[in-house]
Image 1 (cartoon, helix red, strand yellow):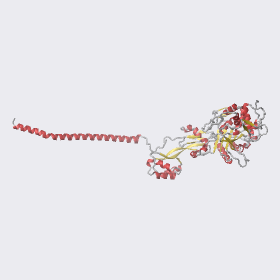
Image 2 (spheres, helix red, strand yellow):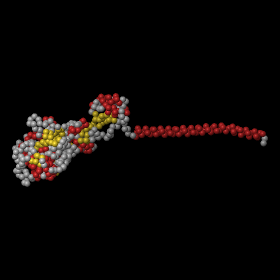
Image 3 (cartoon, one colour):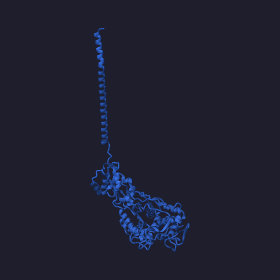
Image 4 (tube, rainbow, N blue to C red):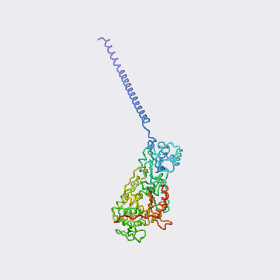
Length: 567
């Protein structure tokens, strides 16, 4: 091999070896460039995806979802409620639009300053509560519901950006206290919680519901409440109540309880004033039970014609002595037993009829059950577990059994309307509407009770209730209150039941006073003849013309026919 060839070969090899490092560097640079490009593309893709996700979320929040901020409770479901009117269409309850104040605490800059501003125009609010609500984490809080127009304007003038108003209905009772216990009231969200509002809550809440027309006549209601108020003050009674019934239809024309309340301010009312004493308060109602015993004796036929009972003699039953308030020195017939309100007399009649017959009649007169009317405020009676002879005797004159005034008024109505027990109603009867009733006593017995109760007013303890021209029938009742298991002689419940006109009984008035006192001119007496009877007469005198009852020519005192049958 020649030298030229060797030298030439060595040069090529050396040249190749010298070029290798340069190639490696170039490959590394290209590799890094490619990796960088991939990372940039991936970053751009990730950023694009994030941006797309953010835009989608913003679109969902702003376009698809309903914002909850500053949306008052049930703002899209404003509740409506139908009116309540009396039997003549007079408005008793309605709903008006008012403004309720709310706040968005997130917009509050200075809670203390805002609270001071709000309290300056709404001073009845509690500052601590207002400040607590303004500093809450919520987006919506109530500040005050149902503002008056003046209050709304004062709040509006504050110019606080965190405050707003929501239109809401408010229940309004334009007659104030009148018929408050009948009407009842609603809560702030217009849910019926008492009286007619509660009893007819579903009907009143229906969309486009017609007004509820009550059996109440506001003219009669006003007369009853007014006379009870006058009497309660004059006789210094703790409480009073009264009922006016149409005994032919069972319609309650008036029902009052004192002390009463203003349903427009039901939240500020004392619980005791909310009590409907006419339908919820249980009393031993005394001698107003005696017409029931007279009816019992007639139904059972336990008295002979012309017979007189030995009421002048002592009567002891199971060691208990039955006494009369006024001394009696000779026997009495049945008519005078009722007219002079003899406890001994009715006890003897009831014992002759027997406990089974007595209980059966009381059941037929609804006195063993709650009064079956629409109002939920109806108390169940208290009756003896064992019906012994002493029970028969005491129940005959209204002791040993506790019922509500409305329950006894309804029972006595059955004895005066021809003998049919008619369930009372607070809703006006429609023409042709069926009346819920059942036979309680015979028509003959009913007529005898009518005659006997007329005789009480003309010749007996009910003289102070007499109203010239309206032929009243009636019966007094005075009962000692049972306190801690003992009867308190000076703590009385006095009652009077009046019905008119005698020629065709249509209406009944029942009056109750709780612990009336003697007054100047009552000769120291606080019994029913000196208070409840007087009030009943005054009520009849005012409502009879309103009800279309005409005065009659003065008639002689009527003495009832003798009880028939022989035993």
